[in-house]
Length: 211
Ligand SMILES: [Zn+2]
Image (cartoon, rainbow, N blue to C red; front, side, top):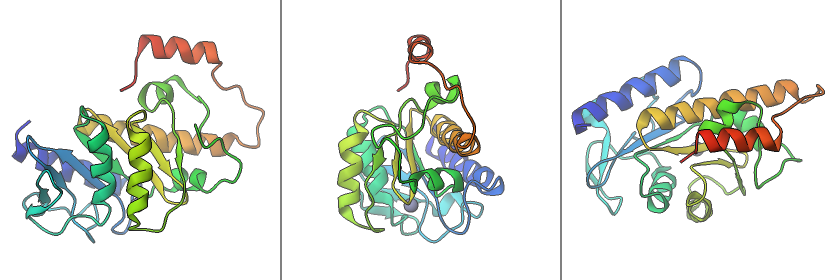
């Protein structure tokens, strides 16, 4: 995919996620890998108002080459890419239901959400919780980096999800699946629920290995 097409795709996915309430204000950010370096959404811009020519272009060291200053959370994206050689895109949202789940006291930090549906197992797989750190804390990037080699999706406690994909579309689809699963999980919390069994999860994983 050429850089021009990739810039337009970031703008299109950003607007789509904003218009459907997956992100709001100037929260949320998107990045995509280039042959060398990355494109990233700029700081303080709502995802429905991105301008393709003003996206931040960073070199392999994360230094700004062209465009506006990148999101202050660029270090989280770079931590994911450093551990995942095949990742082509990373999406991070403060989407409501995922953030709600990230605040729950009694969850399994090794895998926060149960296997509610086969699509969740296929697109997300497992979801570790990254301990809380204040915004901008570089230790948060280190905590993400430690998990990113084994997980393409992680949930930052009291903050939100960050998901890598082998294409921009795959990363967006996975984070949307995660958000809908968080919503279902919260809807079902008071109900007696039948989640997928370990055998059913194993069968889905055999048929559709996750990245
Ligand atoms: Zn954030």
